[in-house]
Amino acid sequence: MKSDVRERQEDYLLDIDLPGCNKEDVKIYLEDGYLVVTAEINKKTEEDKGKLVRSERYSGKYQRSWYVGDKIFTEDISASYKNGVLTIVVPKQSKRTPEKATISIN
Image (cartoon, rainbow, N blue to C red; front, side):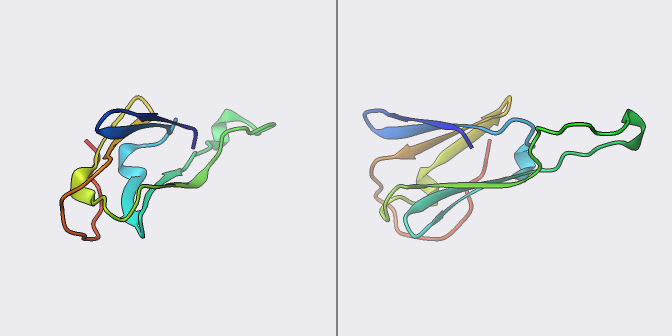
């Protein structure tokens, strides 16, 4: 997963390229102070298109993580997905209590 991470005054902005991936196949969660993004891409080949001579498109599961600290919680993080780019906003500080949950993608 190729990504850009930008630091802003109150938060960090992550733009992650996930071309060919459906929103439903992307999962975001926090675990032990890490923001973890997983995505699964399943390319389907059709027999009637002919014999595959060369394949450069990846099919399988991607996973990447970024350390955000143990004081950031799922309720503080927002995510959106558009045109193959996942955008995540992670605040620098949180005032919430810890809990393990998944992060929804808008």
